[in-house]
Image 1: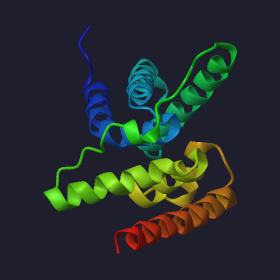
Image 2: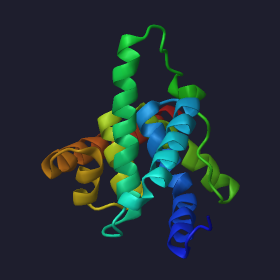
Image 3: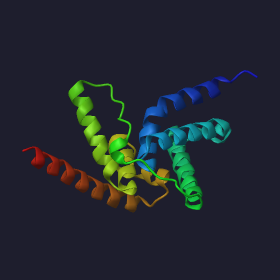
Image 4: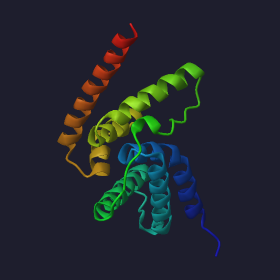
Length: 172
């Protein structure tokens, strides 16, 4: 059975989404290995359910919401199991950035700061400020009211500014 042009386009868009999807998965899982597994599972589910994608809105939002739902299910499963452990944020895989050395170092430091924020704050910050989603898209992806997105984003920005300021003071 030959894949249709529509199917090929869907897969091409999904592949282009992988770096963003991994960054989002890292804000949820706090662990590189878990993030990779989550991305793989989300991609498999997106491909097997591509017939459900109606082409309206952004594919990115549809896949992000699917990823979040898969992670919520995984957390529920882990509560039943023992020894689920997580990796400390300092051991995270680095953010892949195609930039100059200075920008790459800054991006890695910024990524670590974002990852030290609580999950609700880091996910909202990543979706809105890094990935460029609207408040409405972020609310839909995370399954929360738009007002919660706004308050979490505000809290995340304040916290990030304080952390950056604190690091600058330590260096001085």
